[in-house]
Image (tube, rainbow, N blue to C red):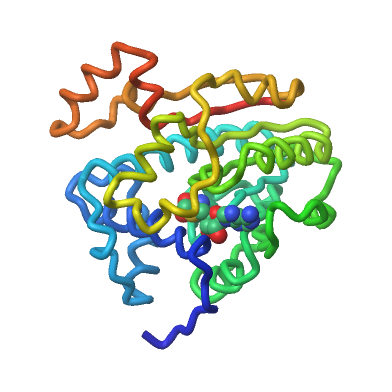
Length: 270
Ligand SMILES: C[S@@+](CC[C@H](N)C(=O)[O-])C[C@H]1O[C@@H](n2cnc3c(N)ncnc32)[C@H](O)[C@@H]1O
């Protein structure tokens, strides 16, 4: 490997779990996301994804929720070609390359400065892509983002690492900054947070998880009354499940409560 990345904190290192999930999905015979770039980055870095000991189920979950978020984002940037898109806690995700938004969309990948430096080293530049190196808890980072265009805001794998207070304050700052917008993220139920703290494959991030999770997709509407739930996607009800997971999926897909214990993608408008 002839790339030297900045030294990452354990929180920043959490991006490798997701990157490896997408790379391993790419290598599987029936890839859900086909994220070739994730695999290329892992190979370029010589990163040892085996250390996470990810089984088929979490790999599938990481890939499917990324795919669902990508579908939502693609639909939104297509219908708002003047949008400003923010990927919060972007890590080394190359969603912008998978989506290829129109050149009129400005896309901001936001993460800690070390991660943005790593992105510049590893991810091919696009004319409409911008990196913002900041702690999302810093109230000033939005100063660098246009205020007069609709926003498309996505966050994959970020919210587990924010306290509920941080999350509410971030959502408030976002909805105050833009005239209108859409926000989509993967939700974490209370059970999903408990599981992430105890499951072997996520032990590397267990101590970093700060969110208590929430079960009711309408809870963010109560935190911030300008948010309106547009859609709750229960992954257990999506058609992509591989045969090996289909039986468990069929059992839980009948129950909304059980499905919500697993992975969801939540989409709000403001
Ligand atoms: C699990 S990773 C997900 C990365 C990426 N979204 C993906 O799907 O590959 C979480 C990311 O959120 C970033 N992050 C967590 N808390 C943050 C904060 N307060 N400010 C900026 N970035 C943060 C981490 O650095 C990391 O890159």
